[in-house]
Amino acid sequence: MSQASGLDRRWLDAAARLARAAIGASPGHSAAAAIIIDEELQLVFGRGVTGRAVPFAEPHAVDEARASARGRTLYTTLEPTAEWGRTPPSTEAIVKAGLGRIVIGTLNPDKLQAGQGVARLRAAGIDVVVAEHGPSKDLYESERMSFRKGRPFVTGKLIVSKDGAVGLPGVRAAVTG
Image 1 (cartoon, rainbow, N blue to C red):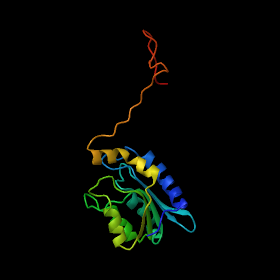
Image 2 (image 1 turned 60 degrees about the horizontal axis):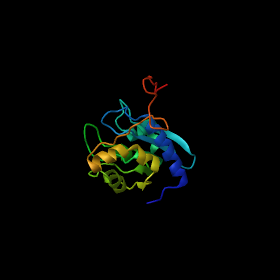
Image 3 (image 1 turned 120 degrees about the vertical axis):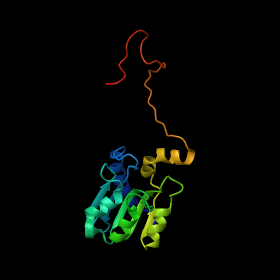
Image 4 (image 1 turned 180 degrees about the vertical axis):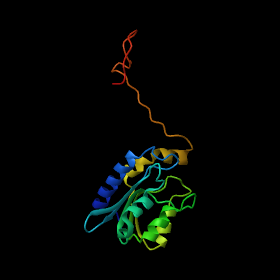
């Protein structure tokens, strides 16, 4: 098992930017992104992002890379699924494609599933690195809160002046541009 390098973190940063743009695009699925590269050439062979017609990023990236995926490295923001549901788990597509190395931004936030994808990939002989990448972890903070604490993660925005007021008394204040 290898460790995440600075270059690995740069590719995970790129994947996190793709995933952030997909937040909310696929109800019921985590916004995730995957990139398949050739480490030596630093060329992208496939990309996948969770979306309306794409429930999982990794199989989409594998489909885009086709036979070029064999022996390459896959960077993904979230641990690939190992559980069978309406669709096969992402780990099946990864193993079938013959990828040589997987760098995962963060483990599944669901305690019942965390580590299962990593175990499946390692059992198939794939070098797996769990980077605990900050931007990837941030993408799933709301899910982590929901699974671990049993409550929603709420973000609010309040616009007030220095004195704590929203506007002048009796005067309508426009708070958005």
